[in-house]
Amino acid sequence: MCGIAGIVLREGVVDEADLQRMAAALTHRGPEDSGVHVAGRIGLAHTRLAIIDVAGGHQPLFDASGRHALVCNGEIYNYVELRRELEALGARPSTHSDSEVALHGYAHWGSDAFRRLRGMYALALHDREADALWLVRDRLGIKPLYLARLPDRILFASELKALLPLLPARRVHAGALAQYFQNQHASGAPTVVDWIERVPAGCALRIGPDLSVDTLRYWSPLEVRARHRLAFDDAVAEWETLFAQVMREHMRSDVPFGLFLSGGVDSAVLLGQLMRHRSEPVRTYSIGWTDARQRDELDEAQVIAARFGAEHRAIRMDAQAVFRRLPRMVWAADDLMRDYASLPTLALAEAAGRELKVVFSGEGGDEAFAGYGRYRPDWFERQYKALRHPGSGGFRVRPELDAAWTRSLFAPELQVALRQHRDPVVRAWRETPPGWSDLQRRQYADLQTNLQDDLLVKADRMLMSFGVEGRVPFVDHRVVEFGLSLPDGLKVSRRGGKLFLRRWAESFVPPDHLWRHKRGFHVPIGEWLRGSFLERLATLLPRSVAVRAWCRTDTVRALLARQQHRGDVSREVFSLLQFAIWHRLFIENGHRAPSAEEDPLEWIA
Image 1: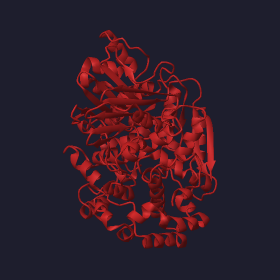
Image 2: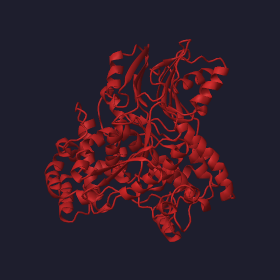
Image 3: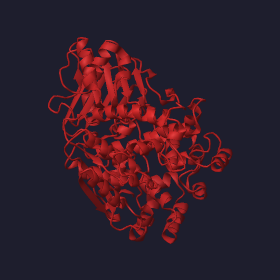
Image 4: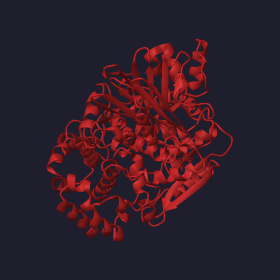
Protein backbone atom coordinates (compact mmCIF):
# COMPACT_ATOMS: atom_id res chain seq x y z
CA MET A 1 0.00 0.00 0.00
CA CYS A 2 1.36 3.36 -0.93
CA GLY A 3 0.81 6.95 -1.90
CA ILE A 4 1.20 8.27 -5.43
CA ALA A 5 1.36 11.77 -6.85
CA GLY A 6 2.50 13.57 -9.97
CA ILE A 7 2.48 16.54 -12.29
CA VAL A 8 1.73 16.86 -16.01
CA LEU A 9 2.81 20.21 -17.49
CA ARG A 10 1.60 21.72 -20.73
CA GLU A 11 5.22 22.67 -21.43
CA GLY A 12 8.52 22.88 -19.58
CA VAL A 13 10.17 20.52 -17.11
CA VAL A 14 8.64 19.36 -13.83
CA ASP A 15 10.39 20.71 -10.75
CA GLU A 16 11.53 17.75 -8.67
CA ALA A 17 11.13 19.83 -5.52
CA ASP A 18 7.39 20.02 -6.18
CA LEU A 19 7.23 16.23 -6.42
CA GLN A 20 9.14 15.93 -3.16
CA ARG A 21 6.61 18.26 -1.46
CA MET A 22 3.75 16.13 -2.70
CA ALA A 23 5.45 12.93 -1.56
CA ALA A 24 6.15 14.42 1.87
CA ALA A 25 2.41 14.93 2.38
CA LEU A 26 1.86 11.20 1.75
CA THR A 27 4.56 9.78 4.01
CA HIS A 28 1.96 8.21 6.31
CA ARG A 29 0.72 6.12 3.37
CA GLY A 30 4.21 4.86 2.60
CA PRO A 31 6.62 5.34 5.50
CA GLU A 32 9.22 2.81 4.33
CA ASP A 33 10.48 4.11 0.98
CA SER A 34 9.98 6.86 -1.58
CA GLY A 35 10.98 7.69 -5.12
CA VAL A 36 10.47 10.33 -7.79
CA HIS A 37 10.91 10.35 -11.55
CA VAL A 38 11.03 13.32 -13.94
CA ALA A 39 10.68 12.87 -17.68
CA GLY A 40 10.44 16.39 -19.03
CA ARG A 41 6.94 17.72 -18.57
CA ILE A 42 5.75 14.63 -16.61
CA GLY A 43 6.80 13.78 -13.08
CA LEU A 44 5.85 10.89 -10.79
CA ALA A 45 6.23 10.46 -7.02
CA HIS A 46 5.71 7.42 -4.81
CA THR A 47 5.80 6.57 -1.10
CA ARG A 48 5.84 2.89 -0.14
CA LEU A 49 4.40 0.57 2.47
CA ALA A 50 6.02 -2.75 1.56
CA ILE A 51 3.57 -5.68 1.48
CA ILE A 52 4.64 -7.81 -1.50
CA ASP A 53 8.30 -8.13 -2.57
CA VAL A 54 9.32 -6.25 0.55
CA ALA A 55 12.96 -5.93 -0.45
CA GLY A 56 12.63 -5.35 -4.20
CA GLY A 57 9.46 -3.40 -4.91
CA HIS A 58 10.86 0.14 -5.06
CA GLN A 59 8.89 2.54 -7.30
CA PRO A 60 8.65 4.16 -9.81
CA LEU A 61 8.89 0.99 -11.90
CA PHE A 62 10.24 0.97 -15.47
CA ASP A 63 10.26 -1.52 -18.33
CA ALA A 64 13.52 -2.51 -20.01
CA SER A 65 12.93 -0.25 -23.00
CA GLY A 66 12.45 2.85 -20.86
CA ARG A 67 9.22 3.62 -22.69
CA HIS A 68 6.92 3.05 -19.70
CA ALA A 69 7.08 4.21 -16.07
CA LEU A 70 4.59 3.35 -13.32
CA VAL A 71 3.62 4.31 -9.78
CA CYS A 72 0.87 2.30 -8.09
CA ASN A 73 -1.01 2.39 -4.80
CA GLY A 74 -2.79 -0.77 -3.73
CA GLU A 75 -2.70 -4.46 -4.50
CA ILE A 76 -3.19 -6.29 -7.81
CA TYR A 77 -4.33 -9.60 -6.39
CA ASN A 78 -4.10 -11.68 -9.57
CA TYR A 79 -0.49 -10.70 -10.20
CA VAL A 80 0.67 -14.32 -9.95
CA GLU A 81 -1.52 -15.41 -12.86
CA LEU A 82 -0.84 -12.26 -14.90
CA ARG A 83 2.92 -12.53 -14.40
CA ARG A 84 2.87 -16.11 -15.65
CA GLU A 85 0.88 -15.09 -18.74
CA LEU A 86 3.11 -12.08 -19.47
CA GLU A 87 6.33 -14.04 -19.10
CA ALA A 88 4.98 -16.49 -21.68
CA LEU A 89 4.59 -13.50 -24.01
CA GLY A 90 8.20 -12.48 -23.47
CA ALA A 91 7.98 -10.02 -20.55
CA ARG A 92 10.95 -10.00 -18.20
CA PRO A 93 9.91 -8.41 -14.90
CA SER A 94 12.73 -6.97 -12.83
CA THR A 95 10.97 -7.37 -9.46
CA HIS A 96 8.45 -9.66 -7.78
CA SER A 97 6.12 -6.74 -7.08
CA ASP A 98 2.43 -7.19 -7.84
CA SER A 99 2.36 -3.69 -9.36
CA GLU A 100 4.80 -4.57 -12.14
CA VAL A 101 2.21 -6.65 -13.98
CA ALA A 102 0.32 -3.42 -14.76
CA LEU A 103 3.45 -2.03 -16.41
CA HIS A 104 4.13 -5.06 -18.60
CA GLY A 105 0.44 -5.67 -19.15
CA TYR A 106 0.08 -2.23 -20.71
CA ALA A 107 3.21 -2.79 -22.81
CA HIS A 108 1.67 -5.96 -24.29
CA TRP A 109 -2.07 -5.24 -24.33
CA GLY A 110 -2.36 -1.45 -24.23
CA SER A 111 -5.36 -0.09 -22.36
CA ASP A 112 -7.04 -3.52 -22.52
CA ALA A 113 -4.66 -4.44 -19.70
CA PHE A 114 -6.72 -2.44 -17.21
CA ARG A 115 -9.65 -4.84 -17.61
CA ARG A 116 -7.39 -7.75 -16.66
CA LEU A 117 -6.36 -6.33 -13.30
CA ARG A 118 -8.17 -7.64 -10.23
CA GLY A 119 -7.71 -5.84 -6.95
CA MET A 120 -7.68 -2.45 -5.30
CA TYR A 121 -5.40 0.06 -6.96
CA ALA A 122 -4.84 3.56 -8.20
CA LEU A 123 -2.00 3.91 -10.66
CA ALA A 124 -0.30 6.39 -12.95
CA LEU A 125 1.43 5.06 -16.07
CA HIS A 126 3.58 7.23 -18.32
CA ASP A 127 3.81 6.17 -21.95
CA ARG A 128 6.82 8.15 -23.17
CA GLU A 129 6.41 7.24 -26.85
CA ALA A 130 2.74 8.29 -26.92
CA ASP A 131 3.55 11.34 -24.77
CA ALA A 132 0.59 10.48 -22.55
CA LEU A 133 -0.14 9.69 -18.93
CA TRP A 134 -2.80 7.21 -17.79
CA LEU A 135 -4.54 7.54 -14.42
CA VAL A 136 -6.41 4.34 -13.52
CA ARG A 137 -8.65 3.65 -10.52
CA ASP A 138 -9.99 0.27 -9.43
CA ARG A 139 -13.54 -0.78 -10.25
CA LEU A 140 -15.26 0.10 -6.96
CA GLY A 141 -13.06 3.01 -5.87
CA ILE A 142 -11.40 1.17 -2.97
CA LYS A 143 -8.22 3.16 -3.47
CA PRO A 144 -8.40 6.97 -3.75
CA LEU A 145 -7.18 9.13 -6.60
CA TYR A 146 -7.69 12.86 -7.13
CA LEU A 147 -6.68 15.33 -9.80
CA ALA A 148 -6.64 19.08 -10.21
CA ARG A 149 -6.93 20.69 -13.65
CA LEU A 150 -5.12 24.02 -13.85
CA PRO A 151 -4.47 26.13 -16.96
CA ASP A 152 -0.84 25.07 -17.33
CA ARG A 153 -0.80 21.69 -15.61
CA ILE A 154 -2.68 18.73 -14.17
CA LEU A 155 -1.84 17.49 -10.70
CA PHE A 156 -2.81 14.13 -9.23
CA ALA A 157 -2.40 12.40 -5.87
CA SER A 158 -3.77 9.77 -3.54
CA GLU A 159 -5.00 12.42 -1.11
CA LEU A 160 -6.14 16.04 -1.22
CA LYS A 161 -3.42 17.14 1.18
CA ALA A 162 -0.72 16.37 -1.40
CA LEU A 163 -2.37 18.69 -3.96
CA LEU A 164 -3.12 21.66 -1.72
CA PRO A 165 0.41 23.17 -1.65
CA LEU A 166 0.43 23.48 -5.46
CA LEU A 167 -3.03 25.02 -5.91
CA PRO A 168 -3.29 28.72 -6.79
CA ALA A 169 -5.67 29.19 -3.84
CA ARG A 170 -7.65 27.14 -1.32
CA ARG A 171 -11.40 27.59 -1.59
CA VAL A 172 -14.38 25.54 -0.44
CA HIS A 173 -16.70 24.14 -3.12
CA ALA A 174 -20.26 25.08 -2.06
CA GLY A 175 -21.97 22.12 -3.74
CA ALA A 176 -19.71 19.52 -2.14
CA LEU A 177 -19.99 21.27 1.23
CA ALA A 178 -23.77 21.12 1.02
CA GLN A 179 -23.58 17.39 0.32
CA TYR A 180 -21.35 16.95 3.36
CA PHE A 181 -23.92 18.57 5.60
CA GLN A 182 -26.93 16.78 4.12
CA ASN A 183 -25.45 13.40 3.09
CA GLN A 184 -22.45 13.31 5.50
CA HIS A 185 -20.13 13.14 2.47
CA ALA A 186 -19.85 14.50 -1.07
CA SER A 187 -20.26 12.25 -4.12
CA GLY A 188 -19.51 12.65 -7.79
CA ALA A 189 -16.56 14.40 -9.36
CA PRO A 190 -16.29 17.64 -7.32
CA THR A 191 -14.63 17.52 -3.92
CA VAL A 192 -15.03 20.04 -1.14
CA VAL A 193 -11.92 21.87 -2.44
CA ASP A 194 -12.24 23.93 -5.61
CA TRP A 195 -10.18 22.63 -8.57
CA ILE A 196 -9.83 19.13 -7.08
CA GLU A 197 -11.97 16.28 -8.43
CA ARG A 198 -12.16 12.53 -7.97
CA VAL A 199 -10.97 10.16 -10.65
CA PRO A 200 -14.10 8.03 -11.22
CA ALA A 201 -14.02 4.42 -10.07
CA GLY A 202 -13.70 1.85 -12.85
CA CYS A 203 -12.17 4.44 -15.17
CA ALA A 204 -8.86 5.12 -16.88
CA LEU A 205 -8.09 8.74 -17.79
CA ARG A 206 -5.68 9.45 -20.63
CA ILE A 207 -3.98 12.85 -20.33
CA GLY A 208 -2.60 14.03 -23.66
CA PRO A 209 0.18 16.53 -24.53
CA ASP A 210 -2.33 19.40 -24.63
CA LEU A 211 -3.70 18.42 -21.17
CA SER A 212 -6.85 17.02 -22.77
CA VAL A 213 -8.42 14.25 -20.67
CA ASP A 214 -10.15 11.29 -22.34
CA THR A 215 -12.08 8.86 -20.16
CA LEU A 216 -12.20 5.10 -20.71
CA ARG A 217 -14.74 3.32 -18.49
CA TYR A 218 -13.43 -0.23 -18.34
CA TRP A 219 -16.01 -1.61 -15.86
CA SER A 220 -19.45 -0.75 -14.54
CA PRO A 221 -21.90 -2.59 -12.25
CA LEU A 222 -24.61 -1.48 -14.69
CA GLU A 223 -23.49 -4.35 -16.91
CA VAL A 224 -24.71 -6.91 -14.35
CA ARG A 225 -27.77 -8.85 -15.47
CA ALA A 226 -30.36 -10.02 -12.95
CA ARG A 227 -30.84 -13.79 -12.68
CA HIS A 228 -34.43 -13.97 -11.50
CA ARG A 229 -34.72 -17.77 -11.53
CA LEU A 230 -31.46 -18.71 -9.84
CA ALA A 231 -32.08 -21.31 -7.11
CA PHE A 232 -30.30 -21.14 -3.75
CA ASP A 233 -28.38 -24.41 -4.19
CA ASP A 234 -27.12 -23.35 -7.62
CA ALA A 235 -26.13 -19.96 -6.24
CA VAL A 236 -24.21 -21.62 -3.40
CA ALA A 237 -22.29 -23.86 -5.80
CA GLU A 238 -21.23 -20.85 -7.83
CA TRP A 239 -20.49 -18.72 -4.76
CA GLU A 240 -18.32 -21.32 -3.02
CA THR A 241 -15.93 -21.45 -5.96
CA LEU A 242 -15.93 -17.71 -6.53
CA PHE A 243 -15.40 -16.62 -2.93
CA ALA A 244 -12.72 -19.23 -2.28
CA GLN A 245 -10.75 -17.73 -5.17
CA VAL A 246 -11.36 -14.18 -3.91
CA MET A 247 -10.10 -15.08 -0.43
CA ARG A 248 -7.02 -16.91 -1.74
CA GLU A 249 -6.09 -13.85 -3.79
CA HIS A 250 -6.76 -11.38 -0.99
CA MET A 251 -4.60 -13.39 1.40
CA ARG A 252 -1.52 -13.00 -0.81
CA SER A 253 0.95 -11.09 1.32
CA ASP A 254 4.59 -11.24 2.33
CA VAL A 255 3.74 -9.83 5.79
CA PRO A 256 1.31 -11.02 8.52
CA PHE A 257 -2.29 -9.81 8.57
CA GLY A 258 -5.21 -9.46 11.00
CA LEU A 259 -8.94 -8.66 11.05
CA PHE A 260 -11.19 -5.97 12.49
CA LEU A 261 -13.90 -8.03 14.21
CA SER A 262 -17.25 -6.43 15.03
CA GLY A 263 -20.31 -8.18 16.40
CA GLY A 264 -21.84 -8.43 12.93
CA VAL A 265 -22.16 -10.96 10.15
CA ASP A 266 -19.56 -9.80 7.64
CA SER A 267 -16.47 -9.85 9.84
CA ALA A 268 -17.54 -13.20 11.34
CA VAL A 269 -17.80 -14.65 7.84
CA LEU A 270 -14.37 -13.28 6.96
CA LEU A 271 -12.83 -14.78 10.09
CA GLY A 272 -14.31 -18.15 9.24
CA GLN A 273 -13.00 -17.96 5.69
CA LEU A 274 -9.54 -16.79 6.76
CA MET A 275 -9.29 -19.77 9.08
CA ARG A 276 -10.43 -22.06 6.28
CA HIS A 277 -7.32 -21.14 4.29
CA ARG A 278 -4.70 -21.04 7.07
CA SER A 279 -3.67 -23.05 10.09
CA GLU A 280 -2.32 -20.44 12.52
CA PRO A 281 -4.65 -18.14 14.55
CA VAL A 282 -5.76 -14.80 13.10
CA ARG A 283 -5.14 -11.66 15.16
CA THR A 284 -8.45 -9.84 15.65
CA TYR A 285 -9.31 -6.40 17.06
CA SER A 286 -12.58 -5.03 18.44
CA ILE A 287 -13.56 -1.82 20.21
CA GLY A 288 -16.15 -0.70 22.74
CA TRP A 289 -16.97 1.96 25.33
CA THR A 290 -16.39 2.35 29.06
CA ASP A 291 -18.76 5.25 29.78
CA ALA A 292 -21.79 4.91 27.50
CA ARG A 293 -25.31 3.64 28.08
CA GLN A 294 -25.44 2.52 24.46
CA ARG A 295 -24.47 -1.13 24.19
CA ASP A 296 -21.38 -2.06 22.18
CA GLU A 297 -20.55 -5.35 20.43
CA LEU A 298 -17.49 -6.49 22.38
CA ASP A 299 -19.24 -9.52 23.89
CA GLU A 300 -20.43 -10.81 20.51
CA ALA A 301 -16.98 -10.23 18.97
CA GLN A 302 -15.33 -12.14 21.83
CA VAL A 303 -17.65 -15.12 21.30
CA ILE A 304 -16.86 -15.29 17.57
CA ALA A 305 -13.11 -14.85 18.20
CA ALA A 306 -13.19 -17.76 20.65
CA ARG A 307 -15.25 -19.85 18.23
CA PHE A 308 -12.46 -19.65 15.64
CA GLY A 309 -9.50 -19.59 18.03
CA ALA A 310 -8.42 -16.06 17.13
CA GLU A 311 -5.81 -14.08 19.03
CA HIS A 312 -8.27 -11.42 20.10
CA ARG A 313 -7.70 -7.94 21.49
CA ALA A 314 -10.56 -5.85 22.85
CA ILE A 315 -10.01 -2.09 23.11
CA ARG A 316 -12.14 0.02 25.45
CA MET A 317 -12.33 3.79 25.22
CA ASP A 318 -14.14 6.62 27.00
CA ALA A 319 -15.50 9.87 25.57
CA GLN A 320 -12.33 11.82 26.23
CA ALA A 321 -10.14 9.27 24.44
CA VAL A 322 -12.49 9.27 21.45
CA PHE A 323 -12.76 13.06 21.17
CA ARG A 324 -9.00 13.49 21.52
CA ARG A 325 -8.65 11.53 18.29
CA LEU A 326 -10.97 13.85 16.38
CA PRO A 327 -8.28 16.20 14.92
CA ARG A 328 -6.25 13.24 13.69
CA MET A 329 -9.39 11.62 12.26
CA VAL A 330 -10.34 14.76 10.32
CA TRP A 331 -6.79 15.11 9.00
CA ALA A 332 -6.65 11.43 8.07
CA ALA A 333 -10.05 11.44 6.33
CA ASP A 334 -8.72 14.20 4.09
CA ASP A 335 -11.94 14.47 2.10
CA LEU A 336 -14.60 16.03 4.34
CA MET A 337 -17.05 13.43 5.65
CA ARG A 338 -18.93 12.88 8.89
CA ASP A 339 -18.96 9.23 9.87
CA TYR A 340 -18.82 8.67 13.62
CA ALA A 341 -17.38 5.19 13.04
CA SER A 342 -14.19 6.78 11.68
CA LEU A 343 -13.16 7.53 15.27
CA PRO A 344 -13.11 3.93 16.54
CA THR A 345 -11.71 2.76 13.20
CA LEU A 346 -8.81 5.17 13.70
CA ALA A 347 -8.20 3.77 17.19
CA LEU A 348 -8.29 0.21 15.85
CA ALA A 349 -5.81 1.16 13.12
CA GLU A 350 -3.51 2.70 15.70
CA ALA A 351 -3.56 -0.50 17.77
CA ALA A 352 -3.18 -2.85 14.82
CA GLY A 353 -0.41 -0.71 13.32
CA ARG A 354 1.85 -1.51 16.27
CA GLU A 355 1.78 -5.18 15.26
CA LEU A 356 0.71 -5.55 11.62
CA LYS A 357 0.75 -3.91 8.21
CA VAL A 358 -2.38 -5.59 6.74
CA VAL A 359 -5.89 -5.83 8.21
CA PHE A 360 -9.07 -7.30 6.72
CA SER A 361 -12.47 -5.70 7.32
CA GLY A 362 -16.05 -6.33 6.27
CA GLU A 363 -17.02 -3.22 4.32
CA GLY A 364 -19.25 -3.90 1.34
CA GLY A 365 -21.17 -6.92 2.59
CA ASP A 366 -24.36 -4.95 3.17
CA GLU A 367 -24.22 -3.29 -0.24
CA ALA A 368 -23.41 -6.48 -2.15
CA PHE A 369 -26.00 -8.65 -0.39
CA ALA A 370 -28.66 -6.08 0.62
CA GLY A 371 -28.19 -6.06 4.38
CA TYR A 372 -29.53 -2.61 5.27
CA GLY A 373 -33.07 -2.04 6.47
CA ARG A 374 -33.41 0.81 3.97
CA TYR A 375 -33.32 -1.78 1.17
CA ARG A 376 -36.64 -3.33 2.23
CA PRO A 377 -39.19 -0.61 3.05
CA ASP A 378 -42.85 -1.52 3.09
CA TRP A 379 -45.02 -0.58 0.12
CA PHE A 380 -46.67 2.41 1.79
CA GLU A 381 -43.36 3.93 2.95
CA ARG A 382 -41.84 3.54 -0.51
CA GLN A 383 -44.84 5.08 -2.29
CA TYR A 384 -45.16 7.98 0.12
CA LYS A 385 -41.48 8.91 -0.09
CA ALA A 386 -41.41 8.52 -3.88
CA LEU A 387 -44.37 10.88 -4.28
CA ARG A 388 -42.98 13.46 -1.90
CA HIS A 389 -39.37 13.26 -3.14
CA PRO A 390 -39.39 11.99 -6.75
CA GLY A 391 -36.38 10.71 -8.64
CA SER A 392 -35.06 7.81 -6.58
CA GLY A 393 -38.02 5.56 -5.82
CA GLY A 394 -38.29 6.90 -2.28
CA PHE A 395 -34.65 5.95 -1.54
CA ARG A 396 -32.26 8.24 0.33
CA VAL A 397 -34.71 11.14 0.54
CA ARG A 398 -34.10 12.28 4.10
CA PRO A 399 -31.34 14.86 4.70
CA GLU A 400 -28.95 14.32 7.56
CA LEU A 401 -29.70 17.65 9.26
CA ASP A 402 -33.06 18.91 10.48
CA ALA A 403 -34.66 21.21 7.89
CA ALA A 404 -35.87 23.53 10.65
CA TRP A 405 -32.25 24.30 11.44
CA THR A 406 -30.75 24.28 7.92
CA ARG A 407 -33.14 27.01 6.74
CA SER A 408 -31.76 29.44 9.31
CA LEU A 409 -28.31 28.03 9.98
CA PHE A 410 -26.51 28.33 6.65
CA ALA A 411 -25.57 31.41 4.65
CA PRO A 412 -27.66 32.32 1.55
CA GLU A 413 -24.93 31.23 -0.91
CA LEU A 414 -25.18 27.68 0.48
CA GLN A 415 -28.97 27.40 0.49
CA VAL A 416 -29.35 26.64 -3.24
CA ALA A 417 -26.71 23.92 -3.07
CA LEU A 418 -28.39 22.41 -0.02
CA ARG A 419 -31.57 21.86 -2.02
CA GLN A 420 -29.60 19.81 -4.58
CA HIS A 421 -28.05 17.38 -2.11
CA ARG A 422 -29.96 14.39 -3.54
CA ASP A 423 -28.58 14.81 -7.05
CA PRO A 424 -25.94 11.99 -6.81
CA VAL A 425 -28.54 9.45 -5.66
CA VAL A 426 -31.09 10.53 -8.26
CA ARG A 427 -28.43 10.37 -10.97
CA ALA A 428 -27.39 6.85 -9.92
CA TRP A 429 -31.01 5.70 -9.77
CA ARG A 430 -31.74 6.93 -13.29
CA GLU A 431 -28.64 5.21 -14.71
CA THR A 432 -29.89 1.73 -13.87
CA PRO A 433 -31.23 -0.62 -16.58
CA PRO A 434 -35.01 -0.98 -17.00
CA GLY A 435 -34.91 -4.67 -16.10
CA TRP A 436 -33.47 -4.09 -12.64
CA SER A 437 -35.61 -4.36 -9.51
CA ASP A 438 -36.13 -1.58 -6.99
CA LEU A 439 -33.80 -3.47 -4.63
CA GLN A 440 -30.99 -3.60 -7.18
CA ARG A 441 -31.34 0.13 -7.78
CA ARG A 442 -30.98 0.79 -4.08
CA GLN A 443 -27.86 -1.33 -3.93
CA TYR A 444 -26.38 0.44 -6.95
CA ALA A 445 -27.13 3.92 -5.59
CA ASP A 446 -25.25 3.06 -2.40
CA LEU A 447 -22.35 1.52 -4.33
CA GLN A 448 -21.97 4.80 -6.24
CA THR A 449 -22.30 7.09 -3.23
CA ASN A 450 -22.21 5.91 0.38
CA LEU A 451 -19.89 2.94 -0.07
CA GLN A 452 -17.42 4.71 -2.32
CA ASP A 453 -17.36 8.14 -0.67
CA ASP A 454 -17.87 7.25 2.98
CA LEU A 455 -17.22 3.65 3.99
CA LEU A 456 -14.24 3.09 1.70
CA VAL A 457 -12.80 6.50 2.55
CA LYS A 458 -12.99 5.52 6.21
CA ALA A 459 -11.45 2.09 5.53
CA ASP A 460 -8.57 3.48 3.48
CA ARG A 461 -7.70 6.74 5.23
CA MET A 462 -8.04 5.73 8.89
CA LEU A 463 -5.81 2.71 8.36
CA MET A 464 -3.29 4.41 6.10
CA SER A 465 -2.85 7.24 8.60
CA PHE A 466 -1.03 4.64 10.73
CA GLY A 467 0.64 2.81 7.82
CA VAL A 468 -1.84 -0.11 7.71
CA GLU A 469 -3.29 -1.60 4.53
CA GLY A 470 -7.00 -2.48 4.63
CA ARG A 471 -8.33 -5.38 2.56
CA VAL A 472 -12.05 -5.61 1.83
CA PRO A 473 -12.98 -8.88 0.06
CA PHE A 474 -16.71 -8.05 -0.08
CA VAL A 475 -15.84 -5.09 -2.34
CA ASP A 476 -14.10 -7.32 -4.86
CA HIS A 477 -15.93 -6.62 -8.13
CA ARG A 478 -16.72 -10.33 -8.62
CA VAL A 479 -18.49 -10.40 -5.25
CA VAL A 480 -20.44 -7.24 -6.10
CA GLU A 481 -21.45 -8.65 -9.49
CA PHE A 482 -22.61 -11.86 -7.87
CA GLY A 483 -24.60 -10.10 -5.17
CA LEU A 484 -26.25 -7.65 -7.55
CA SER A 485 -27.29 -10.47 -9.88
CA LEU A 486 -29.02 -12.59 -7.22
CA PRO A 487 -32.81 -12.71 -7.26
CA ASP A 488 -34.40 -10.40 -4.70
CA GLY A 489 -35.85 -13.43 -2.90
CA LEU A 490 -32.35 -14.71 -2.13
CA LYS A 491 -31.34 -11.38 -0.62
CA VAL A 492 -34.26 -10.15 1.49
CA SER A 493 -37.24 -11.70 3.27
CA ARG A 494 -39.37 -11.08 6.33
CA ARG A 495 -36.44 -12.39 8.40
CA GLY A 496 -34.30 -9.47 7.26
CA GLY A 497 -31.62 -8.70 4.71
CA LYS A 498 -28.45 -10.40 3.54
CA LEU A 499 -30.43 -13.63 3.34
CA PHE A 500 -28.11 -15.53 0.98
CA LEU A 501 -24.95 -14.79 2.93
CA ARG A 502 -26.55 -15.76 6.25
CA ARG A 503 -27.99 -19.03 4.94
CA TRP A 504 -24.71 -19.98 3.30
CA ALA A 505 -22.66 -19.16 6.43
CA GLU A 506 -24.79 -21.27 8.78
CA SER A 507 -22.43 -24.18 8.22
CA PHE A 508 -19.50 -22.43 9.93
CA VAL A 509 -20.84 -19.41 11.91
CA PRO A 510 -23.24 -19.95 14.86
CA PRO A 511 -26.79 -19.34 13.55
CA ASP A 512 -27.81 -17.29 16.59
CA HIS A 513 -25.03 -14.85 15.67
CA LEU A 514 -25.99 -14.74 12.00
CA TRP A 515 -29.70 -14.13 12.60
CA ARG A 516 -29.51 -11.54 15.37
CA HIS A 517 -31.28 -8.29 14.55
CA LYS A 518 -28.84 -6.00 12.75
CA ARG A 519 -27.84 -3.12 15.02
CA GLY A 520 -24.93 -1.68 13.13
CA PHE A 521 -21.87 -0.21 14.82
CA HIS A 522 -22.84 2.88 16.80
CA VAL A 523 -20.71 5.55 18.44
CA PRO A 524 -22.57 7.32 21.29
CA ILE A 525 -21.73 10.86 20.22
CA GLY A 526 -25.12 12.10 21.46
CA GLU A 527 -24.31 10.86 24.97
CA TRP A 528 -20.85 12.38 24.96
CA LEU A 529 -21.54 15.77 23.36
CA ARG A 530 -22.45 17.56 26.58
CA GLY A 531 -20.97 18.82 29.87
CA SER A 532 -17.78 20.86 30.06
CA PHE A 533 -16.74 19.90 26.53
CA LEU A 534 -19.95 21.35 25.12
CA GLU A 535 -19.61 24.48 27.26
CA ARG A 536 -16.16 25.16 25.83
CA LEU A 537 -17.40 24.36 22.33
CA ALA A 538 -20.23 26.89 22.70
CA THR A 539 -17.63 29.59 23.32
CA LEU A 540 -15.24 28.63 20.53
CA LEU A 541 -17.35 27.35 17.63
CA PRO A 542 -19.01 30.69 16.72
CA ARG A 543 -15.51 32.19 16.37
CA SER A 544 -14.38 29.63 13.77
CA VAL A 545 -13.37 31.12 10.40
CA ALA A 546 -15.29 28.33 8.62
CA VAL A 547 -18.44 28.77 10.67
CA ARG A 548 -18.46 32.55 10.26
CA ALA A 549 -17.99 32.19 6.48
CA TRP A 550 -20.78 29.68 5.85
CA CYS A 551 -23.20 29.97 8.77
CA ARG A 552 -25.22 32.54 10.70
CA THR A 553 -23.47 32.79 14.04
CA ASP A 554 -26.63 33.71 15.95
CA THR A 555 -28.20 30.43 14.79
CA VAL A 556 -25.02 28.56 15.68
CA ARG A 557 -25.29 29.91 19.22
CA ALA A 558 -28.95 28.93 19.37
CA LEU A 559 -28.08 25.44 18.14
CA LEU A 560 -25.43 25.01 20.83
CA ALA A 561 -27.83 26.26 23.50
CA ARG A 562 -30.38 23.69 22.30
CA GLN A 563 -27.80 20.91 22.61
CA GLN A 564 -26.92 22.06 26.13
CA HIS A 565 -30.59 22.17 27.11
CA ARG A 566 -32.07 19.12 25.34
CA GLY A 567 -29.17 17.24 23.73
CA ASP A 568 -31.16 16.46 20.57
CA VAL A 569 -29.10 18.24 17.89
CA SER A 570 -25.79 16.40 18.29
CA ARG A 571 -25.64 15.58 14.56
CA GLU A 572 -25.88 19.24 13.61
CA VAL A 573 -23.37 20.33 16.25
CA PHE A 574 -20.87 17.59 15.41
CA SER A 575 -21.09 18.41 11.69
CA LEU A 576 -20.13 22.01 12.41
CA LEU A 577 -17.39 20.96 14.83
CA GLN A 578 -15.81 18.65 12.28
CA PHE A 579 -16.09 21.23 9.48
CA ALA A 580 -14.38 23.85 11.65
CA ILE A 581 -11.45 21.52 12.34
CA TRP A 582 -11.23 20.45 8.69
CA HIS A 583 -11.23 24.07 7.50
CA ARG A 584 -8.45 24.93 9.92
CA LEU A 585 -6.36 22.01 8.70
CA PHE A 586 -6.91 22.22 4.95
CA ILE A 587 -8.02 25.73 4.01
CA GLU A 588 -6.38 28.06 6.50
CA ASN A 589 -2.94 26.93 5.29
CA GLY A 590 0.25 25.66 6.81
CA HIS A 591 -0.90 23.84 9.93
CA ARG A 592 0.98 20.76 11.12
CA ALA A 593 -0.62 17.33 11.06
CA PRO A 594 -2.26 16.53 14.40
CA SER A 595 -0.75 13.82 16.55
CA ALA A 596 -2.73 10.73 17.55
CA GLU A 597 -4.32 12.50 20.54
CA GLU A 598 -5.00 16.22 20.89
CA ASP A 599 -7.61 18.56 22.30
CA PRO A 600 -10.03 19.07 19.38
CA LEU A 601 -11.16 22.46 20.64
CA GLU A 602 -7.66 23.85 20.13
CA TRP A 603 -8.15 23.24 16.39
CA ILE A 604 -11.27 25.38 16.00
CA ALA A 605 -10.53 29.06 16.48
